[in-house]
Image (cartoon, rainbow, N blue to C red; front, side, top):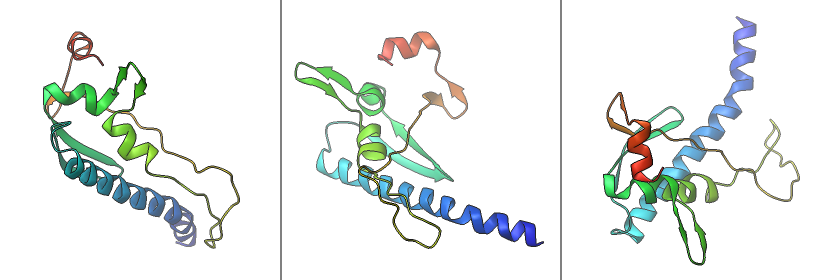
Length: 131
């Protein structure tokens, strides 16, 4: 029993960090949708542990997932802006004291495109969508 309690105690800060970061990302998506209502057609459906599920119109998948290259340089995707760039992670010790670093850490993200729940999009369709 004590081993399980120790495992849970060590796991708590990690789970807390992920939960806080997911909440911040959800807030960022809400802000983005309100600020740029016509830029990208997406709807937040649900959060499952450390995953966020979205419904994205097929014409908006490129902007939402991959961003695009503009004449002035790379424009990051909605995912990149809301889940990575605007979710800084400042490391701290188990007692909550800050660990001195110059820059915050950021999550890496991955995504999966599906037509319907459990129906992955083929490689040819992804290429057609520019992903």
